[in-house]
Length: 120
Image (cartoon, rainbow, N blue to C red; front, side):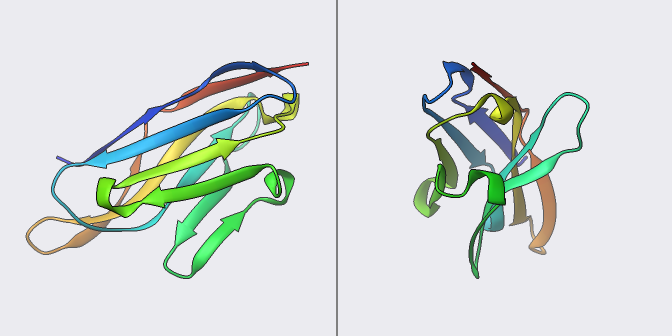
């Protein structure tokens, strides 16, 4: 059974930093892509950052402040968030497209979500 487990959210003042982690576990052949989405109250879920075989992508609003990285040996993706702003407040979800099973079929998996709250 494949699953994603997130950690690292919390409450921080504007200008502060947080680091999110997401570890994939189970019988995994490969993962591509792996990244982070967020959903603020009353808004649609949006892509924050993702790592694919072609490279790294960020939403414009976090460029220069957030850094995504990945440890392939641990099947873990990280999101280092610096210079946080109140508008970054949201539930952050880890996403991974994971190839697993006897026939190595890809499926989308989501973490449980972790709350990030930035106070002004």
